[in-house]
Length: 368
Image (tube, rainbow, N blue to C red; front, top):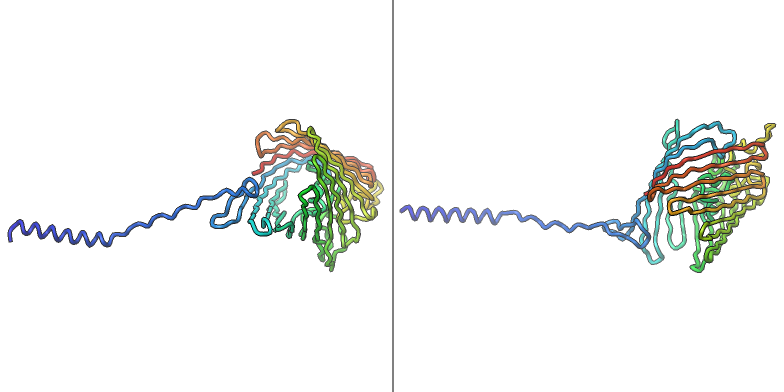
């Protein structure tokens, strides 16, 4: 065998080995295409599709901190300055169905006060479809007709209950007419403690099974709107009715709302009180609980004046048959988008207790 034959044989052997290794080589798989988050604009700003589904999701919330000086709900309060901080997380979902959007809304709230610990509250959590709502949110007695002004202390004179479980149907005629009917949790329990209004006010709620009922109707045309709503407290077996007119005059908005209590000598869920018992304690120590509530009637009114695109001034006045008078004013200043600075001042006169109070709040709030 000569040198040339040896070299050719070695080259052939190396080629065979290389070919065998090439046959065993691992080919990398093609990467799967990324599924980017898609914007869902069918239900308003901020929604996006949950990847792999047709459900839209929106996440938001707020962070708030505020200083409070004295207490508009307790004339006997010796509170000097109280600092309060709050955080809220909102999670909304929406999916299109043959019956319209299937929606949920959940709001979780955390609160901390000076000298206290952090508390957690499931503020709202409900499901809605085709005009029906089931779950926890504010009573339709307040939510449908509207709250008592664009101020923080809007319910110094009680305007109704807030967070509770309910089964609600709301009708929107598309022509300005709307209506609502709601079966609401009577909060019956064995403790006898109130879950709405002032903590000292209790009623007999043991072994009670009937829900409370709220119904209302309204009409809006152009700059004017009118609504009426009534609530029946199945425990006290009394109720109340509120009627409201809203108007938008361009340079300012205004509202006027009046309420009637079916029995002015009693407090009920829809004509109750948020005031401390000191509001209905006479100088001689006599307590008359009805003097903390409306009596037979109550009235609220207010105006909102946009000064410019960053500043708005609000005023709310309220008075009741029990002779409690309240006046609240504030400024809502937005130095940048989604940041609010809000100073507020409240004056309350208690005729039965022969006393007056002045209180203030300075709020900072960032929404996202």
